[in-house]
Image 1 (tube, rainbow, N blue to C red):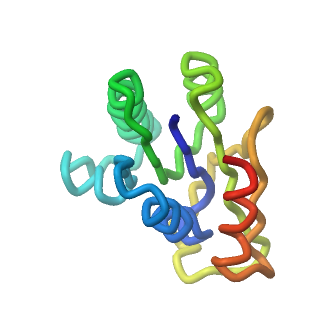
Image 2 (cartoon, helix red, strand yellow; image 1 turned 60 degrees about the vertical axis):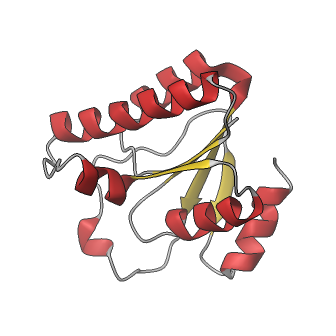
Length: 142
């Protein structure tokens, strides 16, 4: 199974993905910031973002095909790229849309082109919830 956390920077994706990883120690973790460091992709243009997300998708798909659980936390701003991947993966993926309406410390990294999911996702609003409360919503959906 692929557990994909998407949303703007600093809205709680990595925290929640790490909490899930604690519950699933054998799962593989893919994080957007770590990927950019590993592959030295500092390109935040449309093409750079598409390449970064595409790389994460390929790794997640490969690991899932090998029978592993994969936990991904990545802005992945382009809804069409995420929707195409969900279609490819089918029922082997759960998308968590992590968002908030309050200002966060990394709002200056906001992905202007980000479009929220359209279909088949779990809504996780972290505005008023602690990470533990948000995580409870995740556990109910896996």
